[in-house]
Length: 452
Image 1: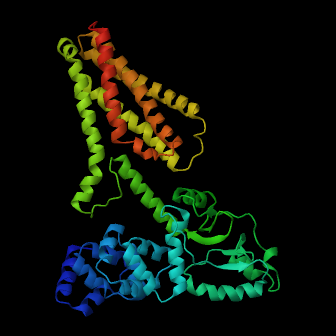
Image 2: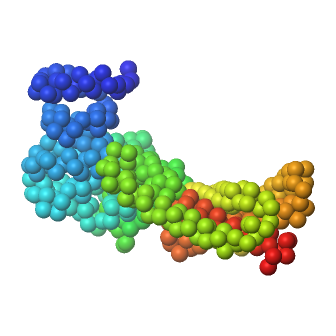
Image 3: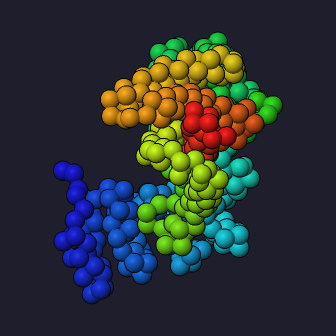
């Protein structure tokens, strides 16, 4: 039965916590999934969450800690002693999850927690993972994996696998290495089991290996696993030695986080923020692009101010300013969003910059023709001025074509310059197209009415 969090449940739980009724709190949490418990903790204050969390034990406690949002987890860990973090949580985690948790700690706390871990091999694995960039494959991988030597027999390999499997939740592939730990191939468990026990591993391996290097980006990892339909992928260093593996569940988390980040950037929000963050953090993330929007509005006002004479002399010209600005912004955002989405999906059709622009030019011309014809028909029917009718229609045509090309060019250029193209969408494109669209509209209108 699926758990549904509601106010009645939270109020009852808070009452038990206030009474320090550990038995009742444990009973409420007993059958819940770690994700559900993490959601409950999000509804509690720090002291209440701490009381609840310290009642959890072993693997369940570590699973809940992983599910807590990063910012909340960081604040929560600050109130816990290093020994408790090490003994109650870290020791029950896989190396990749443990490294994520330790990475959130202050520098002095990191050292203290690592020293308190009883399993020194695990502590060493975590320390190794902390050396890698968090945004790289090395920072994403886990050290736990199944590996066999290419010179072993099937019988020897199966014995070793049974020992190695104790520390691993899921076995997707068996990785084959040589005496120096260089990756030589992969094996499925099925193939290993079905072959004679005396068979040499080197004669069974699949040498068509798909792997990523430790410095590969998260996006590279996700694209490789999607392209080759993998549930896990090995990670090697720059000379080909096996260092770890990345599983599909880690990649799903990365894809979700990247999608959330891109959505925030498209919306004009900088930084990685969530609705539960502090007011100042949420405000600070929104201010930069809103300031750009403010500056854009001021520039737009200056453009109109510079054309005050035309606005006063040409009857009806001001009525269509919102139309021109809205169409310029909307077309630009549509074009840039499509380009950014295609880049994010790993498409490889961006080698021909000119070809992409020509295609977008064709789309822009068709779109411009449709809408300029519609506005021409409207003005022809309801306006007494043919000059205004032509000025608005031609302006709209030019603005749509320009906005389409501008919205395509900017993310393509940013991608070529190795800058996240998601920056090009949303407020930036809208603001720039609004200003340039207004300038074009006023210039064309003045030409038609001989005001220049």
